[in-house]
Image (cartoon, rainbow, N blue to C red; front, top):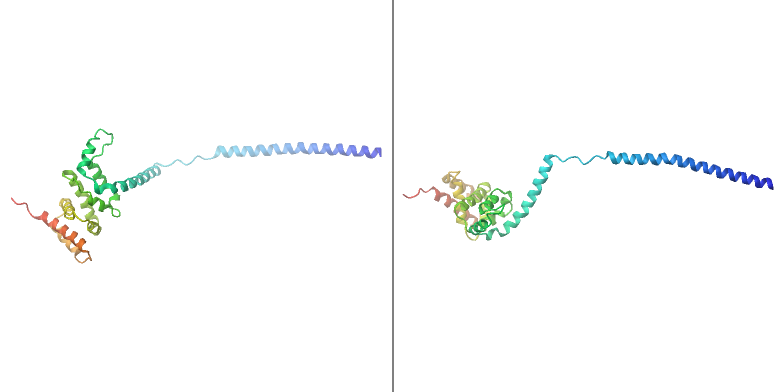
Length: 226
């Protein structure tokens, strides 16, 4: 019995000692593994490539796209009130702000409408057709560039939109003739316009626009009386 107890004590001591050795070995084995994992994590962090530098072309494209988006928004807002604008009153208002860093005169707005692609889209030109109040001198001439260019660009759409006006059709056709007189033979333009629309199915109001255009072209062909 005494020997059995002694044997049990010896076995227990051996078991505890063996467990301790195994634990020490595990810790020693684990430390290099954990260190290796930490080293790998740090290496990956250090070696993460920064975002590729945006090229000049990409940045220019992004900025232009943003500009176009904003410009389209402001275009819609301007067109909402444009039919009610009085260009002479706008000129007076802009002169009161002539000391502003970016003072915008009536001519600036008309030129913006002239060269903005949004002017040709949808029925936007119909609102420009309605914006005739207070036009005179250079403003009237710039307005002629807008409507005249639209006519030469898309005759069918010009007639379709202008026919929706209740008044001012002859006035706008006069602006078209004024603009085209700089670049075309108006006698020839009257003939080609008549021929172009001769066989088209037009409403009465559209036919009135076509006839008004032809009359405006022909009027510029008549020599001034002495």
